[in-house]
Image 1 (cartoon, rainbow, N blue to C red):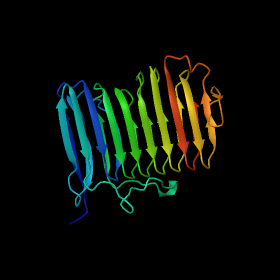
Image 2: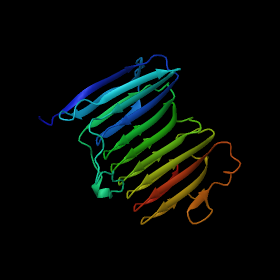
Image 3: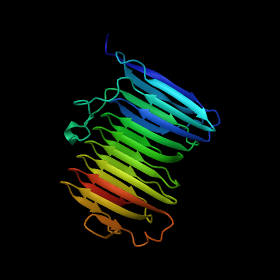
Image 4: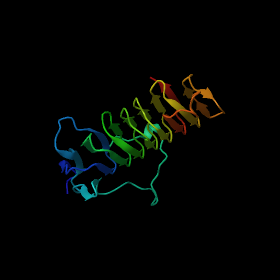
Length: 251
């Protein structure tokens, strides 16, 4: 059978849900996620490319008590070495996936998002959306995440085995939030809004660590804003790389 790249059109209707759990597994392809802009009455839409010999991606949806759980998964899964997925890769081995998934989510539905690729690039532009939690992972591609303004009590994980990680935290963050941005070997960049209280744990095995001067050094790896312990709105940041540079800046 030919290994042609085919495209499936996704359109999952909105049925009045007040919360959503979105679970996306692209196999080894690239992934882009953003918010719907046209006001369409759908929970999610987009295009999912797949290799003809692997077959159409699977889709399942469960609706219960006002919550929708939408799962999208590429057939074939993740590549493994010796039966176990290899997580650490070097930057020059970072992948650009053979397929592209571009998914648009309803920005008005608070969403718990899991986004995984075995090795492709992952770009999540969640500006203007309602997000309650994010877990994003790729085996070797680059990770680029923009978080929404005015989010509350966010728990975010953004990890790659070998590519670069960039995470921008939105303005007006409320409550206590946590971010873990990690690369096995690439550069890690975290951008914080000016004035947000933060405690930062930043390390690199071989690269440089650069943390904005408004954060005081507590110990070899930990930095903190003066008001962190008493601030009602704050974030705890873990930024790590095995070999690349780690940078935490204020914008």
